Image 1 (tube, rainbow over the protein chains, first blue to last red):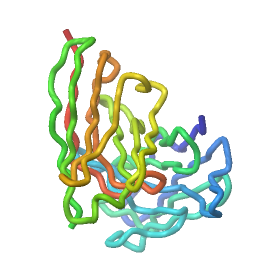
Image 2 (cartoon, rainbow over the protein chains, first blue to last red):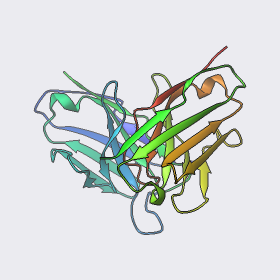
Image 3 (cartoon, chains in turn yellow, orange):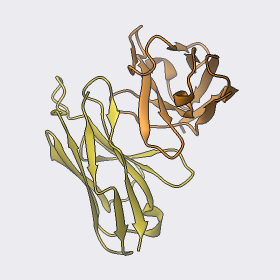
Image 4 (tube, rainbow over the protein chains, first blue to last red):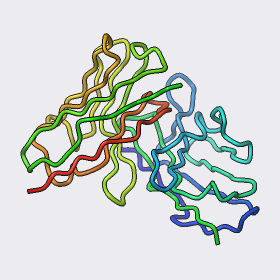
Length: 112
Length: 116
């Protein structure tokens, strides 16, 4: 199975400051169609997950442009340029390139 | 607007069965791959099963293979998860999700508790 390792586990951030979450996979996430199937989800407290980023760097409709995704192969990063209060929650990376599909363990973003 | 509404969760004894349903609206259900993802209390997300939109292909996590069956009724825009031989470790919120390699929209989830 492809293991998705996120770091850090917990990320205390000051409002207005940047934040960065790393996600590393044990295999390349480039699928046979040439696309890299790496997505990022945010789960706010008490809510269902919401997708923010797909195919490494494509932002979903309605997602603020302070969120950006980057990376390639096995090494990926989600960045928040200026953290706002509504960004608090659990962030998960997810790979759709290999069976079984797998999620990272999650990174909790909280306000200092 | 995409809506996914799960139902069928509840309390069941170990070894028992439950059938989850997910009513979909706001998109052309029959052409979309669909998935189930679960989240045990206080834990992370775990992919459970997926089904192709246009064909019979079904996929399962090893932890549920042989016990769970995913299916769909495109005439009713509904996704199902038949869960048999339930174990305490199957206790979780079960989410219906649109997509497969690119999971996109999620339902609100339905809680399944396996306990005697």
